[in-house]
Image (cartoon, rainbow over all chains, first blue to last red; front, side, top):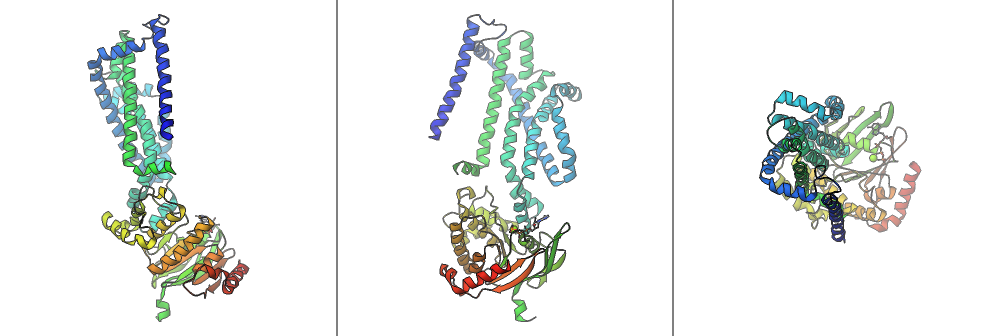
Length: 256
Length: 250
Ligand SMILES: Nc1ncnc2c1ncn2[C@@H]1O[C@H](COP(=O)(O)OP(=O)(O)OP(=O)(O)O)[C@@H](O)[C@H]1O
Ligand SMILES: [Mg+2]
């Protein structure tokens, strides 16, 4: 029954998208919308195919930056969350700072980043970390702080050390929240890398998009967008799979 | 030291505690002998859990001491095992894994801990559930696992804080009989908290009734009902006599 519902939902989603694409295609092919304003879906697919080797080259760069940034963001988030969880005054200072850091428009910060780190991979990774660490850190710290204090007391009454309480209770307890945060961050990571590339550099999807736009090859711009969407979704699903492997007990929740 | 005193595995001497300006419990004296089942009975909010937190060393009393086997352990953790009303099981560990936590904290390897727990499963009537996760178990089953974990830490002094408070009446009744049987098998010394008078009489050798503001021990009652006890004693004269005596105190 549930499976059937699932398939039905998917069909609905695919069908809806196909209809939109069809309308779009017809609108462009019939000349109702000019090609230089909006390329048709088939133009985009052809462009993807024709430029595949070039796009692939740039994609590798962007993917690398996105993933490296994500890994740094995770490491940084853990460090921050553990510090904030263990030391009260660090949390009092840092938590508002983290929120403030997210209110500064990234587009304004980005050129400064290029000034500080040059035009290599570093500024791109930095931008990725900047957009990714926030959802991870917040979900981690909220998870760590919402652990049932009676549970912690129980382990304390057994004589557990702070470290044991962290490893045996707090850390596993935060995993569901951590993965929610990580999924949000992951969808931002490729976008972050692309924004980083817009500031300058020699390769990456962001650079490719800029060049395509300057030469009015809108089909290439759209091809890049398709790749960015696919990459982001893939990372998202990869993390979902990873979550199922790391948290096998979570599936029992649904059965009850 | 005479033999009577040596028998006391736990002594609570003149313990008082206040939160901010309000005195919660005052001058509480309690003893627990080896293999005895003693209940602390009192109204909700009278400070029973506070007393357990003091005995287990999680909080310090303003006055008084806790002695375990004659040694002053006031404010020190790690001497008694503690079971809560909430089962507090870790959802990511199966039944055996949950039972193994206290052993891991004591320094046994994961494997050794699990092996030891596996050997005890049958006593807790959990042999068929060792590899299930808490989410797959009913409330009563989960409390069995919680009791198993409590036992794995120590059976010498077990503090059980309203372990069946969250269960429905039928499950609660079954769990009381279950607890009676398990405690006999493991020869545990138990300090039990409840505000259910029948539960207290059914399970206990002695009952401390605490009441008042701040709460004090208002009476210590010996339950002289033969063991093993079964459901029928609830209808006995002695049982009803005890019940009305306690009701008058509360
Ligand atoms: N950390 C605390 N700070 C301030 N007051 C507290 C604290 N813990 C408990 N109290 C108060 O102390 C009193 C006794 O609480 P306690 O939990 O010991 O009662 P109890 O007898 O276990 O009640 P119940 O039967 O409902 O579990 C309550 O009035 C409670 O509000
Ligand atoms: Mg209580």
